[in-house]
Image 1: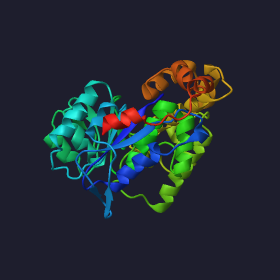
Image 2: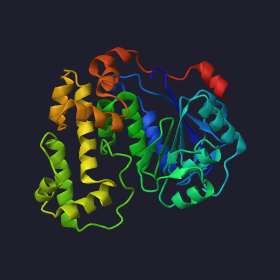
Image 3: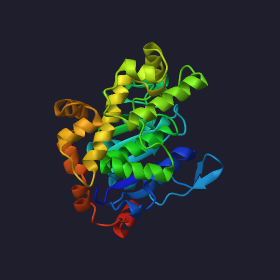
Image 4: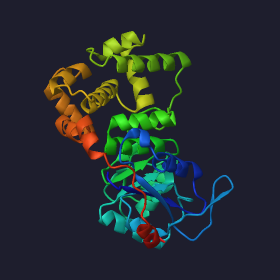
Length: 340
């Protein structure tokens, strides 16, 4: 991540909350993390000053030329899903994609990426209000309407508003590992990790007592991942029937209890792989509740898209100490003049 430049796009009638999420994640210096944190800049899609929601105006220091230098570009919403973005912006997005830059969108920002033609054949998400419109307008795009965020590698899209924070924390986790992402989440005072496949909203509100029981069950499982959990044992602990437990997990997390459990165990394994004192892979598999190294490797690769050994090599304590001993790097004056 050395010198990794994140550029946020601003535009007239800017979505202030979504833009605020991006600046909160990437614009603040974080010396307490001991890592080579992102560089951050803002560029305007059109001449300013630009209006933003809430009656404020924004003056961006860079034009679209800066997108040619960006390693990651974030589109924090778009002013109108029915308005085609300026052609100059779409050309810059396509050029950035072709050279390998990472493209991210929050909420209606996905319409900018779709109009640029970089989403064809890919799975994406957006706010549930826009999902049908996005699918009808861009039939070559696969819209996952109920996901919080979808990671396609080079392109990451999120649902509305606060789901953007989940996606951005996911990016930090991808780049720096879960220990760093968890510390950033603590500073934000938000949940450290919500899987992208969780539902955007609860289709059927749960009775308060059932909601409380499910939350307590999830917290208990997180504290005891190594126990041999089954659907029946979990249902008994929550004082629910297995069928009710299945339904509530689907409604709140967007997945079955077993899939949620596996993902929690992968999260536990990630933290152990990043720990300062390394443990053997077999011991981590046991403590995380996988039962065997083979089972852990299979699930870890499916969810984390890499092997436990490769993850440790990239995010383990020794790797971080060697990789991040550089300090924070600012945008150079040459880049500033070139981006104007």
